[in-house]
Length: 236
Image (cartoon, rainbow, N blue to C red; front, side, top):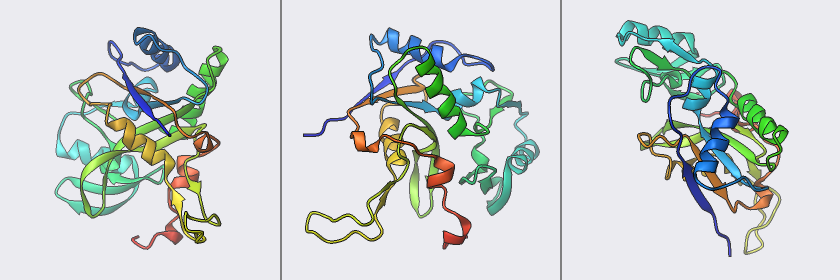
């Protein structure tokens, strides 16, 4: 019988440029009387990653400033409605307003997405290992909307140590039928599950996930494995 546990980890204070995310995570674990175990997945919200990497800019709240930021963070705009833009970011993500976020940002500022979330995840994973911690997977998440569906959910934008896409093509289902197109978005499923315990106003930028099937652990990249290439995209 499979069992998966998810635990939100609280952090005190505000994250600033240059802060040590590994230290902040370990402090949060200590307060929760927990420690890392092999096979754990640590979910980190993109907001604290971006803040620690100095991805915070001045923002006066005007529509003009907002649109300038969106243009600066995008390679193209797919749709427009008022000041809302559906954009393709420099990472290749399709999202609203290039992922620029004002929630939980200091007044007069806006938080941008990390420049390279996959690299950020790899760095955090390597730093934990350097400090003698158990080898774990790191997932960096952000909140995205979805075409044709109301509401938002968290998705993975950076990954290290977790298989981003589990390719089941060529295997058989329970009835022996050959699977020809099934690729499971493991990283996004884990991100969405973690969002159930990571509440925006609760000061919990980390989540510890334990019990994930070991077959889901491995090398993976969000930009390399999850972002669909334009020639495979029927909607662009």
